Image (tube, rainbow, N blue to C red; front, side, top):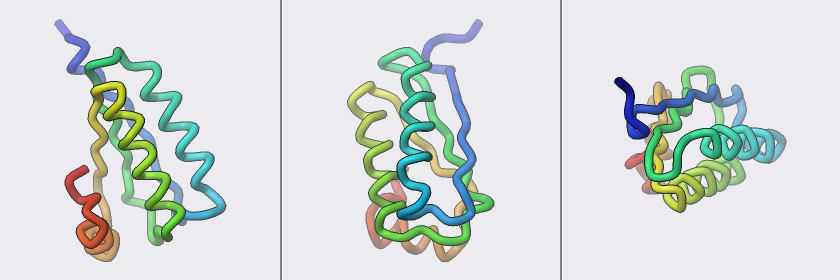
Length: 96
């Protein structure tokens, strides 16, 4: 039997996460977070295809994480490249 904490939704990030794609991914993530019960659930953002993230993309990830925190949900970033992992460490977003 699944509990609200077991609910997981997935989202694939674009190849370039930046100024042109930030609104699209933020809206998609917000919609997915809203489909999960408040106080439970996990949004998994797959970065396997993502080759570049700029400051606007980082901002979008921060807003997604903030929205999830408000709803007491978890955001997980999966499969970042080494370059993106380094950028996430520098910006302290690696904990996602």
